[in-house]
Image (cartoon, rainbow, N blue to C red; front, side, top):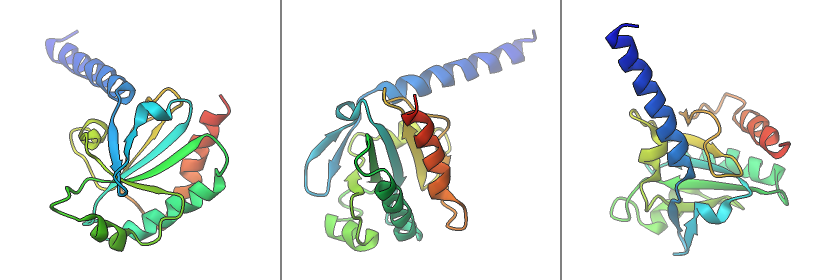
Length: 166
């Protein structure tokens, strides 16, 4: 093996180990009501995190898609969160409520522990969706972007269903 190829393999291995480790860490978010929400408290559940911000022009559409997903899994061990990457200085709680619109059973929270930087990778894109398995580890790669014309809900549902079947 060439030195360059070995370096690339090492980087890929470290990235993979980092991604799994990052998923197992306990991140804490703060809901708009001021409650601390620990990912560790969600162990045993499939967790969907959609990281976004007030700068996302499709915020409401993404929230509506998440709400559809939440209704589909009502009563099942699935938690769904829209997580703002905006600081309180950038967007007050009232601003977040205004931008997001009605959220139903989707929890809106702030990324107070910088989880997005861990899950988003080197080139984070907003929005980014991360699905965590019941052990709190990412299932697949983070999904960047939101295309309202895609089958966003059913794509995520397929991932959730596969995790719930385990």
